[in-house]
Image 1 (spheres, rainbow, N blue to C red):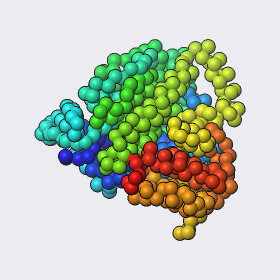
Image 2 (cartoon, rainbow, N blue to C red):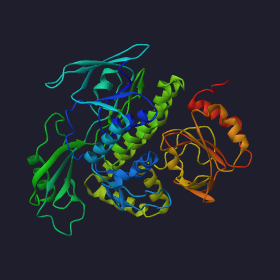
Image 3 (cartoon, helix red, strand yellow):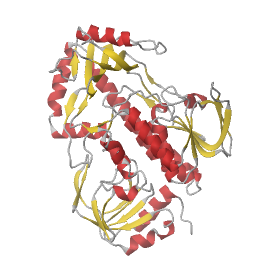
Image 4 (tube, helix red, strand yellow):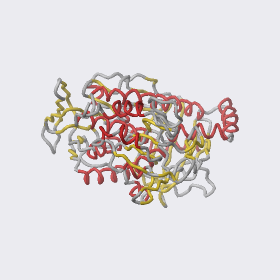
Amino acid sequence: MDADVVVAGAGPTGLMLACELRLAGVDVVVAEQLAERTGESRAGGMHSRTLEVLDQRGVLDRFLAVGEPQPVGHFSGLYLDFDESESRHPYPLMILQSAIERLLEEWATELGVRVRRSSEVSGVRQDEAGVTVELGGTARTAPATLRARYLVGCDGGRSTVRKLAGIDFPGTPATMTAMIGDVELPDLPEDYVWVRRSAGGDFSAIAFEPGWYRVITSEYDRVADRDEPPTFEQLRESLVRLAGTDYGMRGPRWVSRFGDAARQADRYREGRVLLAGDAAHIHFPAGGQGLNMGVQDAVNLGWKLASVVRGRAPESLLDSYHAERHPVAERVLHNTRAQAALARPGAQTDALRDVFGSLIVFDDVNRYLRGMLTGLDIRYPVEGRHPLAGRRVPDADLKTPDGATRVHELLHAARPVLLDLRGSAEVAAAAGDWADRVDLVEARSEDDHWSVPAVGEIPAPAALLVRPDGHVAWVAAGAAPDTTALRAALATWFGPAPRG
């Protein structure tokens, strides 16, 4: 084998997955078709749950040093309020995708990930022992073949891996065209509001650095040819149609185009081939959810794939990846379709936006939309009826024999953690057979109650089993923990007990 896993694509999803696999001791190669990073800005931020994931791995400070927290978010341009009790990182972080990719690749290099550039996947053959990945040659590289146990396609919305694996990509076609560009706008008024609606659609300008802006124009019932390269002149013409002026637009750094097509792979796994990120789902980029969902796909899949590769869990564990992440993307496609509909021009939509905007001021509505956009309210289908079961674990302050810490700091090694907050001998004994796979931590919660998005305040649990992705697999609420259920959860997620 040339590697345990080949990851196709060195975007945020592929790099995050590669890092997760390396943390678990898996040999991974990332095959990227581009010769070097383009430097194109692309996506512009990360939500709370993604920031928490990076915090769980101990690398968040690198991203906070580059990005800028924003005090507001939005649903189709309608502002949302954030609640600082729900997360240590309640606000979106404005940070360009180009910076995210640079930081993730630096981390991947530190972990020993091998990145092969100028290496586009051109063929895939599976058998019982592994997968053969053919890489097409370029002017710089000769054709090559890699042999691995698994291949994960993180190669974007037009994924070659998805097509070669024969995975269908059903959904709805585009009904509009949006242009996006990073440009200078010397004539933009000082009192400009970041988004404005017009008779043909809407346009926005967001300042990223002094002197240049991200301009986005959205025109409805105009569908461009996907294969036609976007140009700066097209962006200018679109802005003039919508705003009546180009605000002196000049100095383009990058121009692109997108639409509101929404598609999702009908399955995330075909034998030894899996999909993550845009290769598994595309949608209108309303609310900035795409990059975040891809990174969280990677964190959900990484520890599971590593457990299977290392022989610690049965291959059936990989089926839980589709079972958990497919509904998440399905919901994102649903809410982005709704946001696209709310953005359409016209008197009827204007009235709908007024009504919808008046509803957002209610706490329950704001909380629901906030949890959906940030990913903080995701709950996976695990056994147990406790409010924490299946949800991401709150980053509670803890006191251990070694000093103060936080729950998320316990996950830096990307290993599962059995957190015992009452010093229960029964919990420790029940988990003894998994001591080589699960870290047992005895601690005390500094707070009597924990805040859980979409739930509210709940009493601090007595013990809980936290998966490497930060989601809770088992909870004990009282003094008499159900150790039978604990052993069942350990076996389900981390393989059968080694000693019987």
